Length: 296
Image 1 (cartoon, one colour):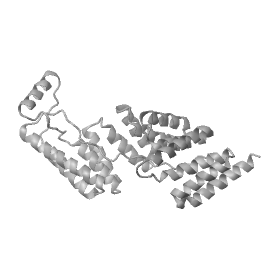
Image 2 (cartoon, rainbow, N blue to C red):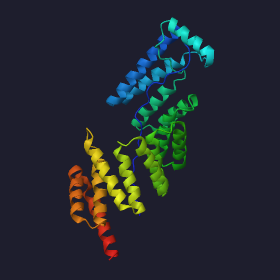
Image 3 (cartoon, rainbow, N blue to C red):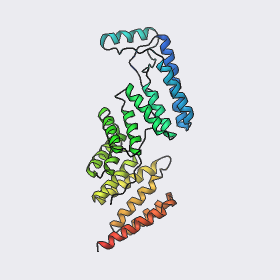
Image 4 (tube, rainbow, N blue to C red):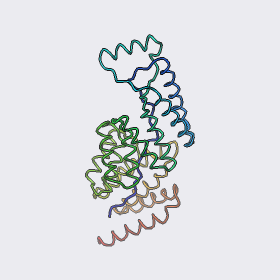
């Protein structure tokens, strides 16, 4: 029986996007002010002040949206405008899209952190209407859909995010989770492999790949992955509570391999990190004992 115990990853915030729209000196000043609200909103988000972050991102959206839309410049026309900006002393000014895709995306993250999934989805829809190639917005919207168990919509958004940014490791990780839950183990393994190739330091991906390998019958491969997950979890500045799950999973594999002493050590570590897993541990041990008895 396949076990389901995934939690989707949600990227915390999107940094301010640089635009390709020329602005007058007055407009550049307005944009710098909008950027300041974006930065303060980011800082408030990091401190856990979601109400403050939402307020700042809302102001940034309002300020950026006051600018008159300007057509994008390419070729020699754009080079000429770059020269004009440099002559005006604003060569380093960061000019954002007046429709504020980045601010909408950031505000979506803060709303989601407050439990307002529908508000977050509305903001991500707005961000994507402004910037249809904003991979992180597709990724975050897909994550919300996944947590709402809207699997097809989530898969479609992860596909789009990966198509736009083929190096987004978290999108492969989350898409792998959905494929696993859909019992597409080969597809899940392919996505976990790619996620690990792009980001070999994410413990959760090894943990999840270990689960997929276990369900494919590759117990040796599962032990390797659970061991790597434990190693990476242990190196974190703040111990991730999922390390207890990784110890539990590896212990189960050791039991299936009849290495009971190793299993016992892992189960002890599991409870050392999370005593509340006692009942889960007892149930899993019983399941393995039944499997071993049936195979005699």
